[in-house]
Length: 316
Image 1: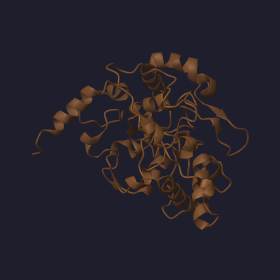
Image 2 (image 1 turned 120 degrees about the vertical axis):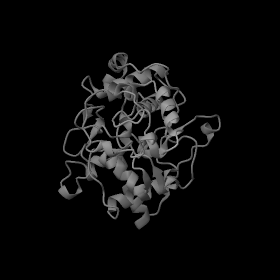
Image 3 (image 1 turned 60 degrees about the horizontal axis):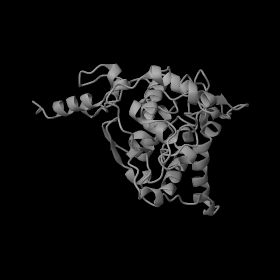
Image 4 (image 1 turned 135 degrees about the horizontal axis):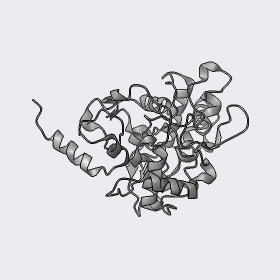
């Protein structure tokens, strides 16, 4: 199941958000053809951006021969989350993302650039270190995202919106669903299936563990994970014909995010304006008084109501 699941929220969740499928969406998804680009400097840079997205581990992963290029801290690829090289509808695509930036980001509490957003993925989903803004790799990522955004914003970005549960998501039930559906790709220990060799990545990426995204990644938030799973998993699923029910998607996502993974330092610095912190961000500090477990598994409407109440109180 959660095949090709994870990576670099990345650029992921807050940058592309959730979309609401509609009848119009079925006929509106257009991807520019990269094979029509000339073999000039611009075309080569865009193609490099695609290669970096598909095989991140082979270019900037932790085992590449050039140590100075070891920016990623795990062996995932960007398309572990941004499916089909960032082109799949409701598979966290890059399509239309270029026009979103500069963008105010509540997580940082400031306006950020697209380069900032890419590095958010590098340090969270890829559990690594930032790319220099002027590096070839950063310029290639930006060029590729810009290329995929030439048609503007379209229905089909993010993950398709998923109705929330009135109850807390149940990781115990989720474990049973994982054993039935997900284990074939991701293994009973959630560690996926590595390809043989060095810097070759995964056939099926890990869902948790030391080589997965860290606890500061967007995919480590329940709403993001559940919507992604419902729209895209098992591998080959589409938002038009989900393989899992709504409840099973929430519960298996709860099981996955309850497992161990790398820790990101200084998460207490995220969301400096505490009332802007999403209800499913499950690390403190919190302004709303609800416990970590409810931020992790829901239900989230009581948290949102409390945040709204607090935000309505005039500052003194």
